[in-house]
Length: 260
Image (tube, rainbow, N blue to C red; front, side, top):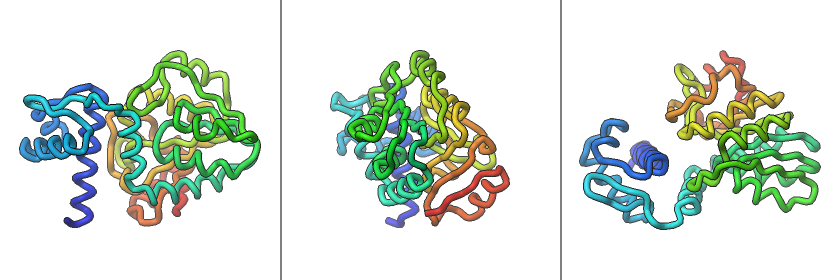
């Protein structure tokens, strides 16, 4: 199977899982309309995802599996484009200076970035990601603040009124954001979770600089919820095989593109 077709299939199946985790249950007809795929294609996707243990098929659609999904799904997401994410993480960590205060949102690319931040000293980390907090919490030279609130039990991030109110107590030198999609012509940066969109926007507002970390597969992709227009982003770190036209368009918005 050509690589482009494989990526297209993976992207569609990721969308299916994200819709499923948001709604708890999906119907074939609903997914067919949302994703612009045939009913037969959606059925094949659901059957394959069931074989892999990501969902349970029901008549006319699928529901969340009774398995422990947050670990399963996070591990799966980590493995997708893993080498690209790790390269982005290394480049991003090199942009951070010792002693800075950093906001980090939830995502697999920010998780890999958190790992690379361990090379630094005296960082102050504020995050709503349980995974990032667990990774950095045992570093003696760091002060790590995990924001409290409601828990998204699929992705293990915290959100809600309490979480936002706590974040308002802090200001940061830099915000590091993982996003679901980047569109140069329409929606800017997007995510699949309204709760995460609100958190991302507040992190951006309360920091001096916003760094978006995203591999090239996120370009031209749109999540369901708008986070910000591109002119509010200071820097984007991505892999070197990103579409050159898209990278040039980002420059028109004043976004510095770092290729790795």
